[in-house]
Image (cartoon, rainbow, N blue to C red; front, side, top):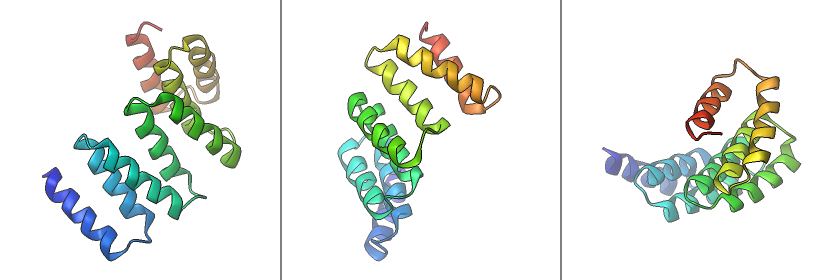
Amino acid sequence: MLERARTAAEDGVIISPGKPEGWLLLGRIARKQGDDVAALAAMNNAVELAPDRLVPRLARAELLAIAGQPQAALDALDLDERIFGQTLPISLLRVQSLVAIGRHDDAIALFKKCQQEAPKNQKVRRMATLLERAGL
């Protein structure tokens, strides 16, 4: 099923190469298939096509964090924050990346700010569970 979805997404970006949504979809599918190189290339295309949109930028930073490049994710998030300001999605992804590079105290401090800002947010609660499971 993923292979068919990827083929369709690849066809989509050939037909409409200027649409960041197609590249974003292709990147997500490639990531699910474990093809981080193709996923990152597709995410980079999405960001290039829509540099003023947060969603493709967050998807790329998340991919970097998941693919074992948490410092690169933090660097990307620094730029995103300069462009868009401090947002909850950026902060939560920053928490994840900080944990990945072993900066647990910084991650917990930032997460506490996220909890204060949006204690009932589903993503905040999910991160709380993940941090608890990690013993943090």
